[in-house]
Image: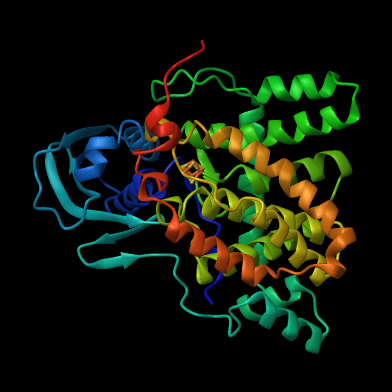
Length: 403
Ligand code: SF4
C-alpha cells in the first residue's frame, strides 16, 4: 500500500485536476523562470471548457500573484496530449524565455514534456487490509499511529503537522468569510452564521450540531471558492475531517500531537479505501468521496477519544456502511449543491459512528475490509448517471425553487 501522503494534498480547490494541477504547474514555471515578468497561459480541452466554473483562472492568477498573467482559452483544438492540457509561456520584456506544455493528469499530479510530477511514493506498506494491519499491531503491541510511523518514517509527523496547519487556516478563513460563492448558482456562504447560531443555542444537541456543521461548511465553502485547502481524501469531501478535528481542538483543547496522530489513523483508513476500492466520485459515486471522508473522520475521532484498534475499525466501518449508495450529482458541475451540506452531515455522522462504536464494537458482524469491498461493488453497480456525469439526480432535476 502507498503512503498516506497521497491522501492529504495541500492546494487550491475545488478540483484536483482543474485547480490543484494548474497551481502546481504555475509554481513550477515561477520557480524555473525566475526572471519572467509576465506569463501567458493557454488552456485547452476540459480546462478551457469548464475552467471558469472550476476556478482554474482564479487559481492561476492567485499563484502567479503579482506577476501579470494573460489567460487564453482554446476550445477548438482537439489534438491534445491529454483532455486537461495547458501551455505556459514565461516572458520577460516581451521576449519568450521558455514555453512548457503541461497535462493535469488528475489528483493534482502533472506531466510536463513527459516528466511526471507526483506525490506517488510507491508501495511502502507491506499490509493492504485493515485485518492485516490489526494483526501486525497486535503482534508488535503498537498503535495504528505507531504503525504509520514505522513505515512512513519520522518525517511523516512534519508532513501531518503541515496538513493540520492548513486545515486550521482553511476552517478559520471559512468561519470568517461571508458572501456568495462563485459559479452562478447564488449559493450563500453559511459557516459564519451557523457558528453564531451555535454559540447562542441553549439546546446542547442542537448547539453541538451547529458548531460542528459550521466547521464543515467553512472548509467546504473555502474549497468551493477556490481557496487553499487539504484533500481528505478529495477536494469535494475536504470539509469532513477538518471539521471534527477543529471542533475537538476548540471545544476540548485537544493538543496538536494528538490531532496529528489522529490524522495518521484517518490517513490510513483513507489509503486502505483508495487501495482496495476508490475515493473518486466519478468512479464509485459520492459514497467513495464523502463515505471515505466520513470513515476517516470517525476513525480519527475514535483514536482521539482513546479507543482501541477494534473500536477504531468499527467506527470507520459504521461511517462508511451508512454512506453506501450515495450518488454523485453536483449541480452545474460545481462542488456546492449537494456537496457542502453533505460534508456537514457526514461530519455529524462521523461523531455518531465513533460514539456508537465505542460501545457496540465487540459484537459487530461486518468488518471494515468487507464494507470497503461492498462500497466498491455498489459503486460499480451504480448507473453512470450517478457518477459525476451530470446526467442524473440533482444535477439533472435541479430547478431553482427558492431565493
Ligand atoms: S456529490 Fe460528487 S462532487 Fe459532490 S462531494 Fe459528492 S462525490 Fe464530490
